[in-house]
Image (cartoon, rainbow, N blue to C red; front, side, top):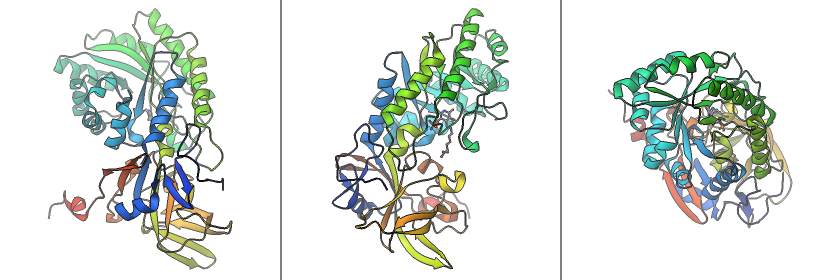
Length: 432
Ligand code: LLP
């Protein structure tokens, strides 16, 4: 395990804001033990400064060209986080009417910097986005283009759109989150895009504003981003020759982080990414839209949980926590690795090998299998790291478990961003 010393809170090069001070784990200036006492567990804890730093790394890396960072709301849609980013100038990538409403609540002026992605937009969602006058619809099929034109006509407004093209580029990541190959459901075959732009030009309700692409998520090598963008850039040149006034290129999201405890330099990673995009864009100067999600929020967050039971079954040791797969499904769904740290720093190096699991009634409910971890006992706290992205947004009420509370840390200040769900919340929609 990499030494996490009682150093200063997050700096821009630090992977995570979770550090030991006086042998106890902190998020920036706040002790996780104190947080658990005040807010209970399981609890999502986010560092505001880390999110801001990551956003600023993007701003800096792309400073030389006109761009907008449209944070992918699906990664973490907490209103407090949306507001934090919006106030620094972020736009947003949304995939539903629900996410549109979140942006409106968090920071209404940001609606004009929204791009709307997704393969199955419904008429009511399109209407809401048209009325909000969002920046761009990322259209994923011919049928959707027709629907968008019809809704725009009905509302008597023009819809700015980009076709999301499928560049048929392979990006090495988990198969569930790879999207850039023709075998995936996403985007429009780049070879037919030109004819669709030609068709769209016949409608006075459609405005060809951009071209978009997104090849997948948790992508660590940057070459696939360059390859995808190169294809988009040559399409844009063709479209301009065809007479379309293309103003934006949306490069999507997908930049990965390091979930292991290896040293990770976020600034360097963003710079490599920016260089790859620059290579793909060559001399193209269109407004660049970026849709990072995970990279901005994953390492800012941890899921804080308390050990309920430690038990032995045959040769195996199980550490059962009060968080479960319904709170953080990434290990169960993608076999994702999350570092797990005891909140009280162990004095020695001695570890046990154990499965860290939740109380949900299925064997898929695990956070780690055969993991070396310091000896913990019931009542101890542990933190699942890098849980700021796709943690709470993928949480469910499986096993009728209320979802966790969320707190946002700003230095030494703690803000409750979402209160813990109650039984009353859980039953409120049901009819008997
Ligand atoms: N733009 C579009 C169109 C997307 O579909 C996504 C993510 C993003 C941007 C943001 O990608 P990011 O920068 O966060 O990689 N639940 C999975 C990840 C699903 C990603 C879905 N799309 C996980 O926990 O790993």
